[in-house]
Amino acid sequence: MRIAMVSEHASPLAALGGVDAGGQNVHVAALSAALSARGHDVVVYTRGDDPDLPERVRTEQGYDVVHVPAGPACAVPKDELLPHMGEFARFLEQQWDQERPDVVHAHFWMSGLASVLAARKVGVPVVQTFHALGTVKRRHQGAEDTSPAERIGIERMIGREADRIAATCDDEVAELMRMGVQRLRISVVPCGVDPARFRPEGPVDRRRYRHRIVSVGRLVPRKGFQDLITVLRSLPDTELVIAGGPVDVESDPEARRLAAHAERLGVRPRLCLAGQVSRDAMPALLRSADVVACVPWYEPFGIVPLEAMACGVPVVASAVGGLTDTVVDGVTGVLVPPRDPAALCRALHSLLSDEARREACGLAGLDRVGVRYTWDRIAEDTERVYERVTAGRAVAVGGTR
Image (cartoon, rainbow, N blue to C red; front, side, top):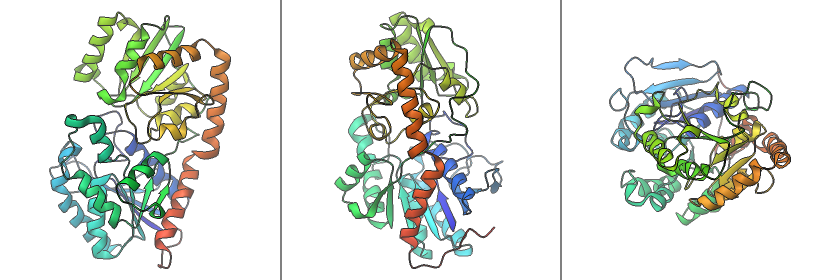
């Protein structure tokens, strides 16, 4: 099958941890690789943000990345990309008119807009994965939401126009239905994890204290890092490592704010702001943790808990979004209310003080990942979605390499 992946701001080739580089980049890269390994011909279309980028790159994993000329060839915050989506759509239309894919899979709402516009002209079915919804972001961020005003309306339009919506969790299904999307047009296809990279065996980073908590994500307030620093006061002989942000993390305003908060509380020596951590280095960091904490205010899915579980490490997570699907409370870790430092402190203390419980949660998490969340399983689920939208159409079998 010829598959066109569209990911307008999140390139599968990008370094993670920056302002607009995170879980979506991992998702697109890993899903494209898994589908390629299953014999499909996959091309990822992402915006070219550097004049030195080649037009087309063949990855070691077997899929191609096309850098779309849309807007200036430099870094542009994703919330400022909407005016360039018409140009993006025109490029896709020209490409697909010459080399027609069997299915288009759009990631994020602006990719969905460009894909729906282009696919209308060439008659290709579109599968949409939102990764995050404007209604949820607006609800939690209010006036601090920097999304374009048109976002929610465009997402509703995509919900009507796309042939199928691939939601990443049950919470998103409910949100989509409130937006007017029929349940029968929605499939649940979660994110996944690479068990060959993330596994219990392997190098382990050294630590300075008896216990270690690790948290990973972009350095933005909604990730809940401040709450973790706050509870560190009540967890003696415990260090907190926060991975994310730029390589030069000390230059980041949010990193400086978090460091100042730790200084005020007297826990700065036990806080490590690690900055950007490479994918190759991430497993060793996660294995070094007694607990991996993922405590955002809201989270569409969250790949980090899966990666921790694949390494055999228990997870403490906010009971929000996709985290309620992946983390089984009391089995693979503990779910806590978001923005509740007291509940977070109790959960972390209960795990840090009970080695046998940590080991049991780690084993249960490892088993859960192996059964449900490997990328090969996710690729298989995605194939079934593609088969539904291409039923009755002539498609390429096994790609056309």
